[in-house]
Length: 263
Image (tube, rainbow, N blue to C red; front, side, top):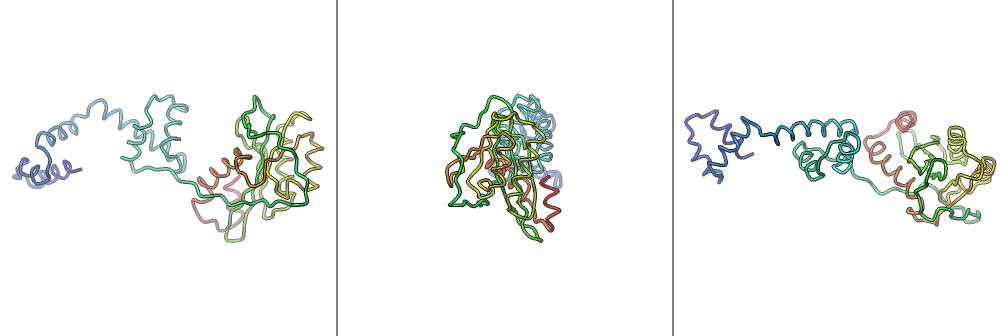
């Protein structure tokens, strides 16, 4: 930045001695001329940085401004096959004044019924199945709008982290999670007795209606311990990303507007 100021001053005042300007700013004259040479004839590294920076800016734009350096680096390496170090990505993002968004602490949505009998924990925090439709995880999130809250229930296949079922409504009744489960069953058609459905102890998941639908579909109900987000980490991680990358980015005037964005 200092060399650029000196160069700009020299352009407006040709009589300005470079040596005097460098002394005034506390930099070396040789360093200034090296900088000027690099600006006039960029080296291969600078050209490479310029090209890579353009790619990074585009990745960041396509992420709606949400990706930080770890995810940009992953997209470069895994998505585009570009061999690049993470520190170099961090440096170029700083130069471009790009940064990701940070997560807020999630508020609990589901409430436990102390009189309900929960399912046993069939997962024990092992969220790495060997194939599709072996383990589904489910949860609910909420977000305010100008018309009131919107609630979203999802069913996620832990094998590839794909949302296989979802339901969006203006209420927290059991139908919300039943509809999400129905979509997952319709789309995936799981074999009876081979798919574990894992959730927390929310009243929606311990309700009679949901239990009946679970048994009718031939799914194995599972629930983690009370008040421990790690026991449903896949769903918690998904909602953390949804909140960070979509819900918290703006204010939502209507329920319909937010529901369409989530969908």
